[in-house]
Image (cartoon, rainbow, N blue to C red; front, side, top):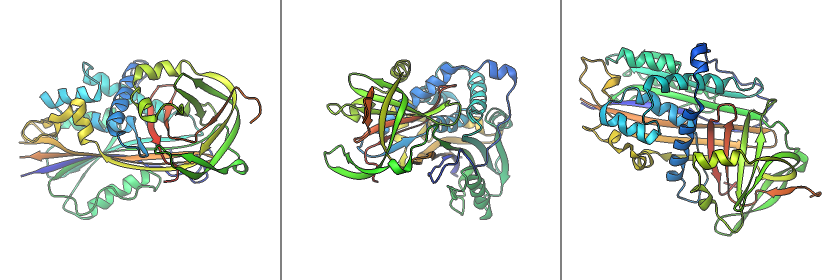
Length: 415
């Protein structure tokens, strides 16, 4: 008999007026021990960033708007990784770029990362929440559940999945953790093959450190990749920015909040280059080098207001990164999720990712939903004038940990 384990990682965002995070509930992450915090290793975060770049390049093959959450996807997958054994565990480690890393060290680093990210700035909202919803008649490994509860601070509940109201209970949690922006992840009735939902929700809302003035927003032309143009509301701002110019692109950092620890970093390829060429250069080594080269410059900025939605299956991309065996019934082994006396042939059947973001004069609100389904068988004179009037790339990054929370591409801001 087939059963399914669904792991759902959620982030959602849409920007209305952003009043320095007002009206948003802050999810409380317990402070880890001093030992765990002091042992936090940013090199593991860099590996997550590199995984994000690698995955993004597999997905960004079409000239369309896209966005993923490297932090959200990696946390969801690494919760599942704790239940993988044998070849499946090795394959996941390769795909997630965590080969050779001790499991306990990885989990404790994620525990510290959760705390650091969610305590960045009292004027910003970055919520990361995890939960486990277990079918009450299936025997799970106590060690697996304990690890996910302790290191990922996941809420754990048992439910009668045969009861249609169980889906409502899970969806209410999702709705609460995404500030009402996602109201349904699980469609009732729950599939009788499903044995667990692991859900990770990430929600970000931040006001620019220096907001754009609405009166300066005007309709401007944006040139698409095929040479056609669309007219979009475009924001304007002048001032002092962290800025970088190379032979092939320009980049600018737009910080959020009071301490400017979180920021959106925007990259605009030169007109004689292309966004596709730029994306192929995305890796952690190049990223670290670029981040070290930014300098404070005076300039003007024109940035379109944009709303972006993206949805894709990650199965093929993760397979291309070396995780194929984890999707194969009879070969994958996630028996670490089940109790020792429970016959279970567990494999991942589907991984889906969905994101939404809006950017306006006040700031940014962003989010995404990832579902990992696991089955069981058995103008003035400035230094620069930067106008984002053609396809560009962006990330939202925390400078303290180095973690990239979101990365995306805007091919058409009018969509």
